[in-house]
Image (cartoon, rainbow, N blue to C red; front, side, top):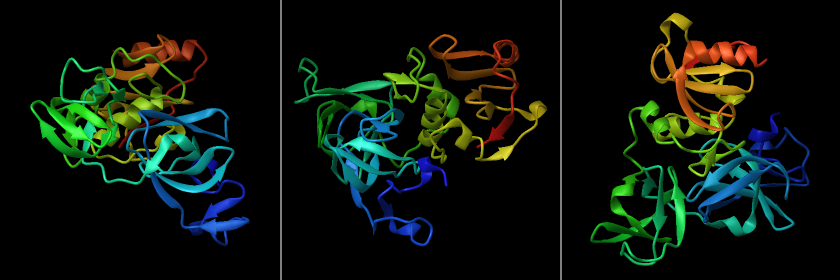
Length: 271
């Protein structure tokens, strides 16, 4: 079983795994949500970052150890460890951040000192409004920066373009830093399309398309890398080549990646 998608800490497992793994204990899990702007999802308590979760992301806690909570992200099934202090009570978000980045404020006033920064995709619970601000359970946010959670975008390419200027970050999932699979996932989830967290998992979604049939929103895969087609000739991706998010000609990218030892395109998928 893929540890990234298996809700089993090594000691405690979700009840869905009974008769599939040997665990000290099985549990239904404890619903929670990310309560900080950005949290690293780790491979082990205090270990390496696998991915990141954003404020408001639902998380089912399976086990706890050394100040960390093991569980599963609701949006994509990814399993790992979060610092316990990053979690709060489960909630039902009403709005999502729909711009590259925004701020939370202690009051609905432009001149107020910000409480925290939020990335595109962060989810909040709106409880009030005043002037051009919406009040959330975590602070006030400019109303024009939020979008109802039930109003998805309709063009993943335009969503991906919101991340122009974002630095490349291995395992990153936010405007502060993002990698290739993080960019593809952010763009697709924002459009209501299910998408796992890593490029090898993303290569399994959708249907295969021929090179001649490539169109806007299709995904191109290399071993360990993913990009999104802007059209039949251009693509957008987060890449270590420039340590950022760029749009470039597909043919040029294919030639460069091949020359650098990254191999050929191994799949083209339509989510």
